[in-house]
Structures are given as structure tokens and as C-alpha cells.
Length: 363
Image (cartoon, rainbow, N blue to C red; front, side, top):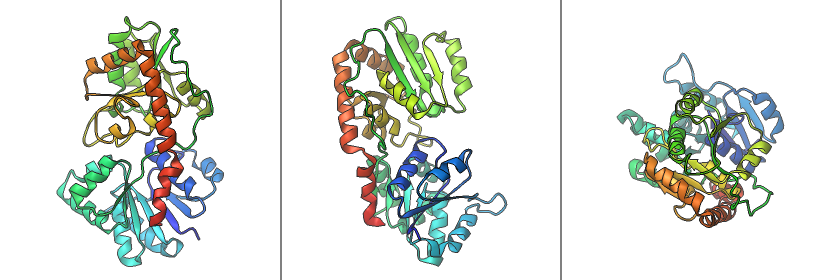
């Protein structure tokens, strides 16, 4: 019997930072873990390939309220099939873990990601419930130091552990990339196409730079609800010859895209409710020697170290964003230094094994 049970609403083959984070966790503890998650498109093929048990079922009731009672009942039935529970996101699954512990005595760990904590603080009742969940957890795992300090301060949590998103597989291609190639300057964003990722801000910066940087090109990799809106904006700004949309790319294709890009740009929106908790993609870019430009905000400033592995700019300041891009286009030695420093930091500090090993003492 695997001693660890991971319970989550967000798991591969779903894409996104949280799903990748949990996928890496289960890969690391594959000998000791099983997973219960919700059905996803393509899950049968994925589940057959992994070396641990994944069960798929709906976890929230559409009829009973509160909806998480269905999950609490599931945990009661599963009490003899695990020794410790890991739940991802504070509410609602954390609430089910808290209630189930009262009857089963099984300890649980809560992984928080940022937006879940922000949402829990939006009402007095949710905040109080979240406080119960966090106080009874064996440990609260945060994806950044900033988030760990936030839950300590706002929920009086005593025990936290910071396990940052990391890099699972480092590239084996050329370390010293083509920083001095004058024939192109490629900007890249890899993310879901949602408002908080800041694609619109990059498009506005491209408008300001298209006549100043020869052969400027902006690649947008990903899919999501903002896709048609962004395409329309590209047309309105007359940027169709500068911007390329790519989705459904393979891992091999994505590796080539990173390798051929000069600068990763994702100036996220510093919205307290829907925010970037860390930003694994900044580290993925760093693994290929690509420095980043990002928004100066808690959590993100741990993924991108200002002046060392990239540049941080003020939230929503398009002039500052455009100036930072132009500066790195002009100063290729600075671009190269940032990229190589970013790569070295990613390798030394953010391998998944190094991060996930921090959890072992709690299991």
C-alpha cells in the first residue's frame, strides 16, 4: 500500500504550473504515492505511462452542499489505504482533509500556490475555515518564501516549508547560446493565454520597439481564453509580421523554441486575487540560458533575481518594459551574462530532486 495519497483537482495531463508541480512531486515519490484526481482529456494515456496508481473521479458534488463533503466521505472510505494525505490548494480540498482527520486521525499536508490563499482571504467565513485547515496541517508547503511568510502572518501558521517549482529535465544542448547574432531578436512568452500573464503588455512594448529593433520577433506559446482577443489586438496594432502564435507544441519543439529565443518576457499583472505565485516558466527559460523580464512582485522576484538572472519592471509600466527590452538588445554582453547566471542558478538551486527532498522529513 502506498503510504502517501495525493488528492488534487489539478493534475497532468492538464497543463499549467500547478499540474507540473504535482506531476514532479509524484514522479519523485513514485514508490510511495498514489493519486486521486478528476478526469481530464487524455488521462487514460497519461495514467498508463506513469509508475504510480492514478484514480480518476469527480471530487466535488454537484448536488450536495458544501460540495467538498463528497471528498470528505471519500477520505473516510480510503482511510486504510494511506498513512498521510497531501492536498493541493487550500480550499475546498483542504477543508475535506481537515474534516476527515477528525474521524480518521490521518495527518495531512497542504500545498498552497498563491491564488488559493488570496481567494481564502476574500470573506470572513472562508478565512476562518482556511485557518482551521492550516492550523491542523502537519506542515504547510508554499511555492515561495513570500507565500510562506504570508500564511504565517495572516493565518498564524507555525510550520511551513518552502518547496519552489523546479526543473525536472535540464536541456543537453549548447550551453553558450547565440547571444551575439545580429540577425534576429526573439522575445518569448510560454504560458496559458489568460489576462494575468501580461501578453497585452508585451504587444504594446513591441509597438514601441518595432522600428527601433531590426528583425524583432515575438513568439507566444500556449492556448487559453485570451487567444482570439490577443490575435485581434495583433491585427489592430498592425503586428502580424512581428508576432507568432504557437500551440500544441511537443516537448522537443518547445526545447527548440527556448533554444532559439533571446529573451523571455512575461510581465504578469500584480492582481491580489489572481496572481502569479512564482513562475516556473522563468526557470524553464533560465535552464536554456534565456534571461527573463518580469513584473516586480512577491514570489516572482524569487524566480527572477533583478539584475542577476533577469530584469524586474514596475507593474503595468509599458515604457519601463520597452526600455528594458531595448537595453538588452543593445547590450548583448549584459544579455549573455544574465542568461548564463540564470542558467547556473537554475541548475544549482532548482532541480526537482533538490526541492522535493525537503518534503521527505514530513512523510
